[in-house]
Image (tube, rainbow, N blue to C red; front, side, top):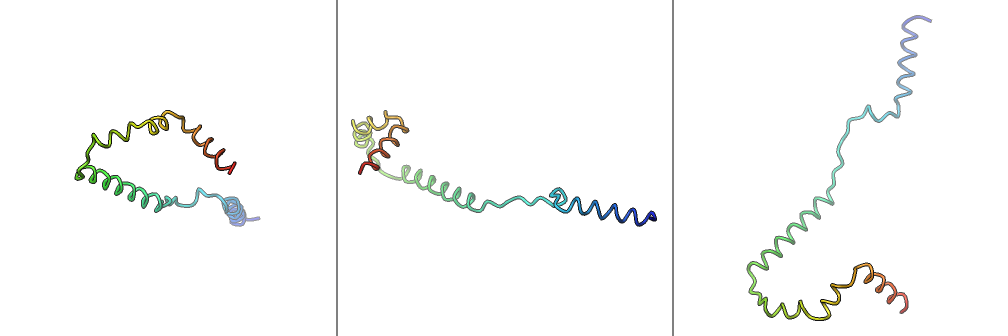
Length: 94
């Protein structure tokens, strides 16, 4: 076997070994278009909410009566895991 044949066989073996080697490929970062879109939607919604509170004529003393009502205070004191369990129990028994 001549030197060139041995080199050619070695090159073919190396090519066969590296056929499924991903290190030979260039890395192209994945594009997350959905994330970008929904992040933009959320930012626009937050800006709209801030603008509505800034420009709106809100009577906070009147709203404070409802925010401190007994039902809302009771709902805020219950752990969220219990509320989810209670909701599942109520919906499954119907």
